[in-house]
Image 1 (cartoon, rainbow, N blue to C red):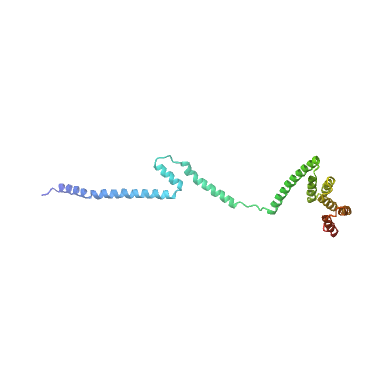
Image 2 (cartoon, rainbow, N blue to C red):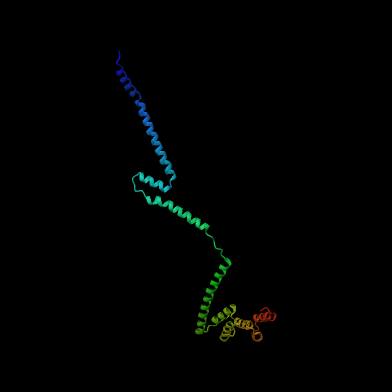
Length: 215
């Protein structure tokens, strides 16, 4: 008769020996699946991270120091930038009167130019008193006439005539300045005298304009 217990032991030994490869295979598959899940999670996390963070993770894998400050500061800076952009968009824009700005700029430029002109005129006047150059006095006569300063224009035209009475332009400015100041009769008398003396074409043209009321 067979020994039942001995047969059971042999059968269990045979059974364990038979299923051992399957157990090893199952463990290997389980380990492989676990590794795949871990790798997949790592890939997903890395894909969601910014470029700078990916580079830092790769550096950490190679046992290099991890720039932790950069990882934590980047989101804060992004939020701050978004907040600033929203503030710029939401902040009310003041209405600017372009016409007012243009007038202020023009006035400012005019003041600067006036100051420069005044300084330049003073320099020319000073130079004239030193050298008595008729070109300087004629320049001042023309400049002051164009600026509507007719009394000064008349004065400097007269100074030019005193130095050189043959300068026609100074006589014409002198006459026009007197006319602008309301001395019409005197202006006509001086102009007629000048025309009789010189037979000036320009003088005759000016006389015609005065009589027609064009000046």
